[in-house]
Image (tube, rainbow, N blue to C red; front, side):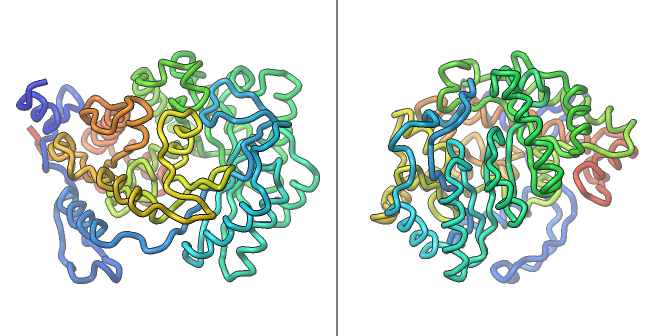
Length: 456
């Protein structure tokens, strides 16, 4: 594409037949309350892009000094055989895929050396509840060394032992599990057996009853080629007593890239997701108890308050190997969980160290040369640059390179679609629908006046 055509495509984002938003021409008046690193600015900024540019300059200069998030893989073994598995798990009874005693001790030492006092420790797998003993050891040892860990266990909830239920009931641990929106879809992709499906249903209901909705979160993985009907998903979640849905497309990682090749660049997801949101808004108009979709909620709040940057896909700069680490089943350290998956596939070695030998600072520095979208020619021309981010590892996974033109990447197309949807709502939705959106995303109200002026 000629440079002048690409620039025009990036500068002007058409979000409806009636509305065109041009570069730098949206935002709302915001008075920033800066933290200890930001007090020197202390000015009122009137444009979202300007606010974000200042914030990005600050984040660029002040990188995280210590980590506060650790993803740990004590075992790669799993008791399910999900067709879209993005991890390349090992069989449940395989040998050589669990942490050794030395790896356990070295991992605890590494966390204590690199972390803040308050940290989140997320156990993944495989199926981490197969090694409940390691979870208990890590948590107890971290606490004994003065850390305050919040434990998250990513489990399929397929086989939960009595000891595991007892631990969960008597701890503050959070459960993150998968339910693919409809029981038929879940059985098709995950349990693949009606008896196993019933076991999962029972365990999911026990988790919700025992731990509550605050400690039981659910992710729904959707194949946009054969997706569940949104209305059925809404009802299924309400039947479970849940009011938050988090849907995501099949990830082009692990075993999934072999069985679902279309997931490499599946634009059908964008159409499905926007339709899902439209149907969710209509459904909520008739409900006393609202359902929200997690990622939509985050994007809305991200646009309205650009200081929010907790979601990894939209962090910018997305410093790798600084404030969170992933430690694999052999003790290898990775900058992201996706980097671990690429290593498992043999596609590329993005390890940044080992718990026994420490970090490879030279490799971390090299990776971070490309962690900031302000250095990208396409991103610099896009009105959404400062509320978007850079997913270097996803680009490598899909295209085998990190410098694919941004507007051609799945990350860019997916986020342009949802940013457009949010901006269209802010610009054209009725007061009643805006009030509904505010309630769905947990805000008292949304001031849309700055978005309604003529952008043409």
